[in-house]
Image (cartoon, rainbow, N blue to C red):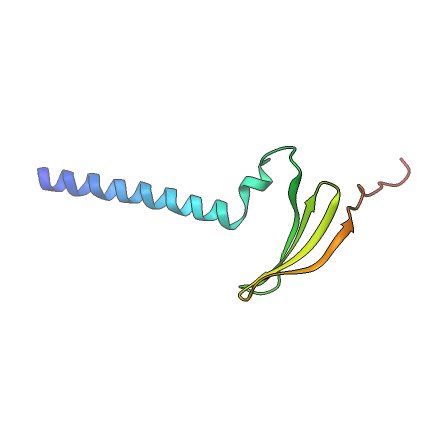
Length: 95
């Protein structure tokens, strides 16, 4: 009976650790820390990310009020465009 209880306990522990690992992977995969209000303020921010394929993505990064477009891929980072003026908030039209 003790062996069965020990096996159940170990199985439950593995199940909980597996679920925690899955949740951590999902949070990293879908960048939940940014969507749930990451650090506020600061001079550096990732404005937008677009995946081009499974290993390459475009990144729009804002430093102070200047934006930079980066290409991150298998060959390493590549600066596409720098010194882009940050876009102002979109106008909502007349109310």
